[in-house]
Length: 440
Image (cartoon, rainbow, N blue to C red; front, side):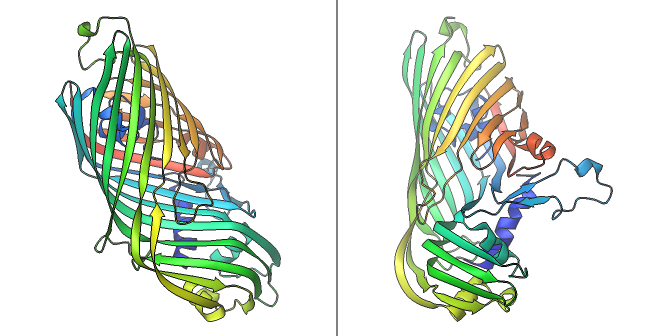
């Protein structure tokens, strides 16, 4: 893949560790409105919102088990923050890199009737996944083989995918059951997808060694490298897009308080606890006339000129490649989400929620989320909510953050606390949003 993908995009992950899956903490709020739809489309109906209009929201989530950042000493530093000195590298045979940027554009939801609701969302999304990449090889590639160290490497089932797309979703929700203390609702989102293209690569096996003294790289194996719609990571555009379709499906069950439903208005939460289950990002985008090259990497090559070359130029000049023009398909990051939310007392809630990838890390031409499970206590009112998400993240471990909603503004991060206090933070996220909420 392009050197930009292996350097600018990946090292760009380091710089979001104090800034930016999506809107963690906020999207379980009963007043999250449109943001709740992207987690579970059933939340569109029987909402505490009469209408909710999102103007612009941005969420970013990224990291790697290759590096860990120490920001805990930032307050004690008199000379400023030194990125290199604060980064601890952990090269393995199967390091993982991931980045998810989610921009929620103009979107809205409203009630059609007491039992039917509708929502419309617009989003622009970018995913990066590098799975099972050898850390020593990655380090040498990112540093243009400047190191004089010798090393051997072995890499099995490497897959890498960068994909950018836009989507317009139409969500319909309906109340399915209201009987005594039991309440059930369901929802579905149908999405029109506009693919901006992608870059993908994979190898079943690649091994070799690097001689730093002679600057000789010896490799044995093969590499498939593909480019969809002349995709350029330097300048991602949505001019010549490819169409596709996708969808989300979700249900929510509530065990409601024994208080007579008629005594509570639409602005009140009626449940003692609720359970939610959803599947998001079902589907894929197909690209015609993708350029896919299979490289035979059985060779020994000099790396002295690598600094002035892109990855493609280095591959083309040193290895035999067979190019094909094919129709390719990139799978969306299909995921399963669950939620259990309990009312401790009025306005105080405790939730358990998780997001699990339904895409295997060795699947070719596909993006995936990392698995997360969180416990989130929150204080919630119509105008103001405050969240304290605490969870376990794949490839990282424990994370804790905070967020709040104050009228039209939402700001938060599910990793801000651990990022600032930990000496080995491997993942980070942040979100910010501006909307026009109209309450019941």
